Image 1 (cartoon, rainbow, N blue to C red):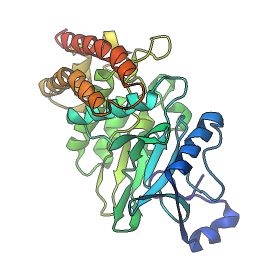
Image 2: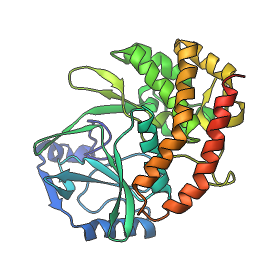
Image 3: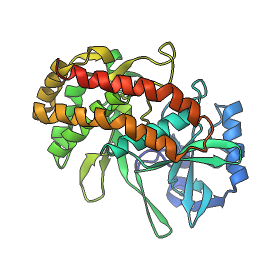
Amino acid sequence: MGWDCPGAVQFTPEGRAEELHQRAAELTPLTEHDIADRLRILQDQPASWTTPGEHWSLGGQQEKFALTWLEDQWHEAGGSAATTHIIKPGIKVLHHQALVEHVTMRAAAATGVSVADSRLLPFEDQWAIVIDRFDRVTVFDKVFRLHQEDFCQALGRLPERKYESVGGPGLRDMADLVRKQLTDPEDGLRALADFLAVNLVAGAPDGHAKNISLILAPDGNRSIAPLYDLASGLTYDPEAVERTVALSIGGERIFSRIRGKQWRKAAGILKLDTDLLTQRVATMAEAFPGAFETALAEIADAPGTPEVAERTLPALRQHCSEVLARLDE
């Protein structure tokens, strides 16, 4: 629970409601050393995500914290202040996971997928992925909140049911929601198709219903938010990361079983033209390995880049080649 949550909602204990209404914004400038220390604390004490006085709350399993970037300076947000960026050092049990997430997101953007903006930045000796919050808009020195709901929230499913395999939302549930709720349902269905496609093409196993959201703008416009938490699992051994997608495509989740037949079923659920959908998948699969390699080259000085390139690029090229071949089956 927090005063700065995903979207525009704010939660407070009943006894502090008046304080919430009368609160003032508090922004404390931070140095690079301050942020590096926060990252070191996450490495040693992953349960301690906030410092005293902070009131933000973000879901998800990764260690993270949120800061505000204003006037070319990082700040710690307190009181009514809204944060603008999420900083994550990556999943500790997976080597260089923050790097893999950033590169996967940049490669996805290069293939035309709408994703949250990210950078991989050093804070002293600590590297982290820094992600722009798409539910915040900064105008001059004022940060405004936009409301968002992930698909679990919008469909009334608790977080423990975010995966389709344990009773979470499936593609049909999500498509029905898009048709009922979005201002431009056709655009939303194409964005949902991109979510399916990029998780398969990137070999990303964690594309569940909490990793795709709706944005509800103040003018009433409702759309699919840019994608986030997109990270290839092909860098890692199959024993560590499954070779499956979280959201089934035509009833299949295992990479090697998703063929043209499954994409035709998905097109039917989405009510999209089958040829256009399979062409979109093919175009993405053809471009993704090169886009991933380019994104790696852009951060060549980051620790782990050579190892990630060596482990990922051959596997990604092979995987995308197989995705293409199976489209004709």
